[in-house]
Amino acid sequence: MQKTRHTWQSLEEVRTAAEQGDPAARCYLGICYQTGQGLKQDYPEAMKWFRRAADQNDSTAQCYLGVCYQTGQGVPQEFGQAAKWFREAAEQGDPAAQFNLGVLYETGQGVPQNYAEAVKWYHSAAEQGEPQAQFNLGVFYETGQVVPQNYEEAVKWYRLAAEQECGPAQCNLGLCYETGRGVPQDIREAVRWFCRAARQGDKTAQHNLGVYYANLEAAEKATQEGEPEAEGLEESQPQ
View (tube, rainbow, N blue to C red):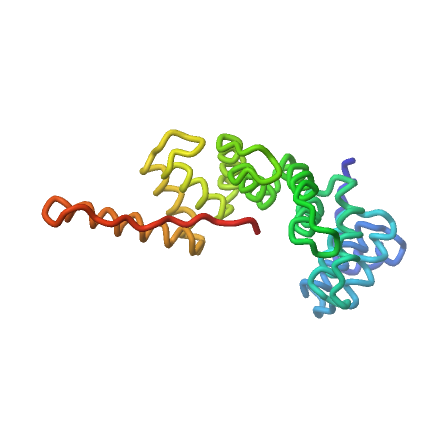
């Protein structure tokens, strides 16, 4: 279901619309209080407006409300309530809520740990282009947990997330090229993806680049000093 786009000229117009019961305005006012955008940051006030919009079935507000319970912003941390609100939004097709609900199922916070449910919600979010869900789904396919191990499918999801500048996905895509899992082995392509992830501060990719250059240097010496002892690469895990 596509939401109607709202345009307000000022924060005063947003507040007026919110007080008149507009759920999108209420959600936006909550975001302003949460982030301190144009208003003094006030988490309890943000919660108030998120809840009002969420009670009107606004999926974005429901997702934000879930995050507040998940992180303890403006309300005591309560994962069960987080799961409740994420589910409300996820069932309406909100990709961020679907991803967040997947995380709760994967970690067993607020719901019984259930990897199959986690994968289900990651898949729903990933299909809508949510990069973190795409990355996590790729990890499940690469490891063969819950789903049949499928390196080609892992590469597919890593690539979609990597192209959205998800650092861990870029790192794992590089490792797939390094090892030839799901794609033809291509060291140059591996290094390219490691570099993209490393520039974003991904420590695993930085480590892998260091290993690559160390092994390259060792290989150059091998003709005179014998075979080098290769170091191991690392892989990013679900977030």
